[in-house]
Length: 396
Ligand code: AMP
Image (cartoon, rainbow, N blue to C red; front, side, top):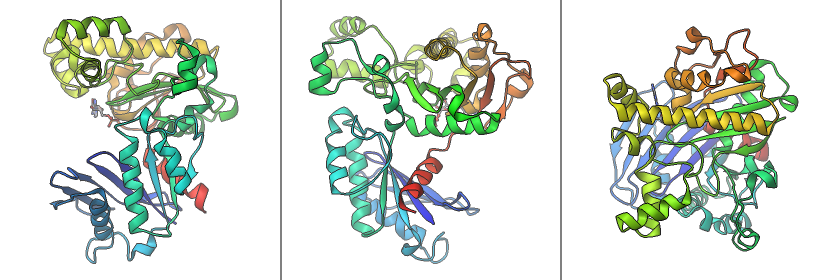
């Protein structure tokens, strides 16, 4: 069974075709600058990456070009479009309505639309991608996989904000959490690798990428996570501030003559390690600058790993202990320095890092010593594979 996995943004669309039985990627790529001009990247398994500038006025056109590339006589990974058995769509916000992945029909689309308010930048784009695929592949079953769904098991004490209760009732203002597909995938995988029972293990997953979040997974269920109503809460990120005193927002908005939307834009796009360092949001640039003596880059790196360590401590408290810690995503998988800086602060939990093992990039492995009370692992995430698995589970 072949699954087309689609991750649709407002002007971009990432795709992969995965053979579900072997879990091999048959082809992958990206449409960029949809509605502006258009660029298609296509790469079949074991083949060359092709990049072509082609007009893509709409998402429908982008999907059509992807499908054409997939069945291209010379380089296509598939013989015919009928080789696509199902489509899995990443959907950012499922609100309280979606606690797991679901087969997409008109009612589901209407329910996702009702969540648009909660993710105005993402959900409308996800829906456009779904509509384009349904039009071009009528009759092919489609599944929605939600970033928020895994965290719907959080108890009220973790998801409620202490604001007037009617705001929750009227507007559904609460903490939802994101990166759920990754937290779910990694928390299962670390138990397999460590030989632990998912149903009786306390795991903390540190998903450290350009967007970053930590989750507490107790016996296979998310009981807390650092992102909230939106992906702005929690850790210091590439360009996002993470946790901040709301009064500071009012203060700098007044000083800078910004309205509320302008202030939130600063917190989303001009803050985080980028804002503090003034160098970059990319950790490779930051380490480089810090090693050359750039003080602000050093502060930004320290701020980042300190905040991760604080959340790990908080979640060890939330679960009354921790058995396993996973590092994943771009920084978690590839930056030994960040992992070391975080783990140095976790000695009181019985974390003991194996510096040699830690000095690796992008590999699935244990990086704590044999004696370490907590098993610390690098577990590369694979959201596309997780979406393909969820899709197969619903359509097979
Ligand atoms: P993601 O959002 O998971 O794709 O992660 C992207 C981020 O990972 C980039 O902005 C970098 O900061 C970081 N990253 C990627 N590769 C490396 C690397 N080799 N060393 C350090 N950081 C990396």
